[in-house]
Length: 192
Image 1: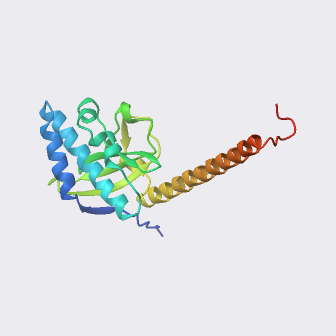
Image 2: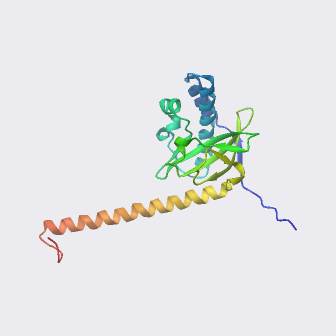
């Protein structure tokens, strides 16, 4: 008996404001090839942004290089800044592709990579899956983890970051108490 596993995906129209931004950035590029690259990258980022907002994660498009005209011109970047977590790379793929292209310039300093399949009409997209790290320019789509793993991973990252903030706050509070004691001429044994 074969075991059938249902994999969570997300398909929906690409938000209109994202399509407008993609078209705007495309027109500002010097070549048609660069314009198409920027267009697909922007559609991907916009779609992942929409999905993560629906799932309750805070994003900041203005901190993303992919929303910056100059960065888009200089690099092949499709990053989305997640508040207090880092950058998530949103790589576009067309419907007949078996690989996700991950340029060398974005293979580090990312919390993960999401593959976004853009429809032929450029109006709809589908999240294919994600991976935490890449070490190759061409990532086989069949190596992607299911989308539900992305949500679990981002939730874990959120909890780790929250714990770090709490720990830093406690350390800061302890240092303030020690400074207050020093001002009052109260010193711990061994202090010099």
